[in-house]
Image (cartoon, rainbow, N blue to C red; front, side):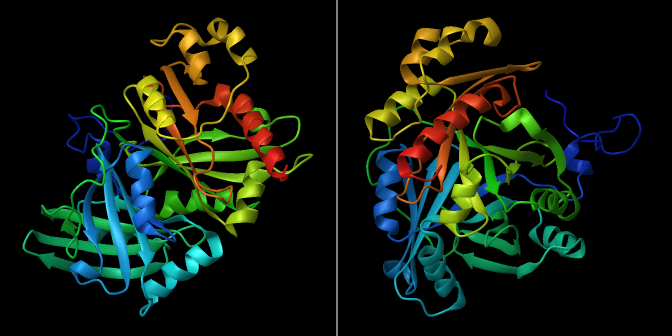
Length: 389
């Protein structure tokens, strides 16, 4: 496994905790949901069902007693998206969703994290400097009880802390089970959320890394600075924080001074500030995923053929032949722990903001450092088409 700054492990014979979760001051179970504020949740749910192969499992709206918002819950394996739009704003939450879409376009408002104890997690976070948004409270229905709380992070993004250990409903109380919009593919296009990347303003990356270190007990997993992520025209810096089990990983990016506008600068300009840039989705078969999603209309970034001419010399052998990688424009990176395969979509809305990554890991816990130059040159080509480079 790639070097992690996790110092929580201790010997099983010492009488102290021997797993990261037991020793972690802020234990987590994993990502609970990525919550999007969108202009039209019904249409967005159709898009993610048809293009990403996700399955609609729950719904909240006027038919279920929600007079202010409509929300669609879609899943794929352990990954869960919640798409929310406003019907008629009447509370702070409704006005927030409505204002968020108006200011930022469709985007992520909440990276919800499942925790074993939402009350303890909230108390720890606030005690260590987090800005509390919602104190712990219970919601109940015939399927049990969920405890929720929320803290603020970069931009207008929040982390809802979810304890659903006493609940077996389709999502949360207030939501009803829903039938799929379309039948998902026979083989899942992805299985889980691998990591979620945030873009912050120049000079703010270390501040938010320190936030996750202090407030949530996350440790620094990777760091990319200087020439690590640079092309002839643009550059950025990135650090990755993660919980002790590496189930929740948050890379944080900031722009770097360069000749032209970086992808981070473009995002900050069109999003109107800091926010979630992309969500990486873990797949067991990236070839099948890309073929299925591309046939359904998903657009992926292009990679020049020259990238593949010498790929085998430095990336070594992978389970996917080079000719197939070239055909599908899939990238490869290898480190001391293994290799990974990855590919990135183009932005999935008109604003050049949120996009997705498909990633298949074979030992490597990296983020594709060897691909940074090829990836960012591909992004620059798209920026140039948009007139934003």
